[in-house]
Length: 75
Image (cartoon, rainbow, N blue to C red; front, side, top):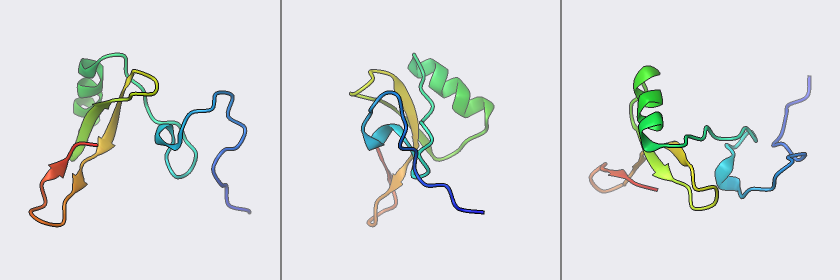
């Protein structure tokens, strides 16, 4: 069985920030509240919500850990 690479046949061309490393599109939310409810209902910890400048929708992402202090960093 061959491994699957990133998708190359996407109908809309969005920058890499819209896809994970496997080519799967990121979850989009119309409102910040919807994203908060998703995080809460799926019991996700260590995630942050951000407004995408490309599609003007909200996405969730892992909080980045800084080397000094370990504080979360907004993307």
